[in-house]
Length: 394
Image (tube, rainbow, N blue to C red):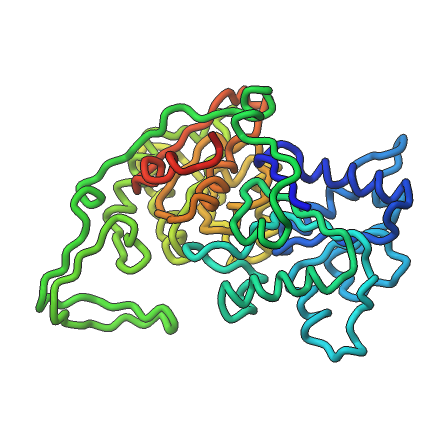
């Protein structure tokens, strides 16, 4: 079964209530909560441990809970949180006699079940162990179908392969409905940032000598091009480094986005790659200092899978004052709940309507503590005009 609910409308709370009711009524005996990366698993684990169900008793206290660290779970465990990657190892990478029984679980709930659908994003920590997207989707489906269980997938953005696995949604609650009902907020008209570079693109003439970076080794060599190359805005910082573009955009963001006021809110910047994120962080820090602000480095930080303990940094971004600006690639596009995000900055082009919806969904949650009534989009790569017309959020 597939349930489609807009980002921020309570999929995790619905899941906890649903699993509690089904276990309490003994409709099911053992459940598995599947995520595709540990940050989402840790977030879910915290929710199960803190959500009170009966009096002061939490879900975890009533039924017990096995977390990400428990790879092999005894049959008495009522609920187990695990990643797709760990399920693949337990089911597909073991000898037949060492695999868990097919009735290990009788209920499997798959979080963000649209995963594995994108060609224009970086692979998640689970997906990097697979050959390619098709291999990921294939194994994802095989481990889900291995167990003789009821499978319930929840997502804000169903993809074609999602419906092929789970069927058409049995329930939908759209972003627009949630805005009208007062659960989510909308954005103001987007701020489209135009630069000479984004308007004209980059042209490298035949015979010109350029520096070429080998992404595998990090070494830089020189090369002479035999013919002319033209790069559009969607290739900035992916196939060709455009530091001047990044510097100009950082200066514009520093002029427009307040990060000092108590109710300023958080800002999330989407970069094209891990290396691009590093560059953007440095330009933003310098731009705010050029504006005369005394800022610390921890106010503007990169949050990608390459940082030390990304889960802890995500929690800091959500619960503490700093970082005030986070620069990410794909780590924060799905399932991360930071209500204080009031500004989104697009420095990367994507071709997926689903990824675009997920990116915009990071800022739709209400945050009464800072008086958040709308959020802002700063688009330096013409992403909004290209994908807003195709989104299912309307």
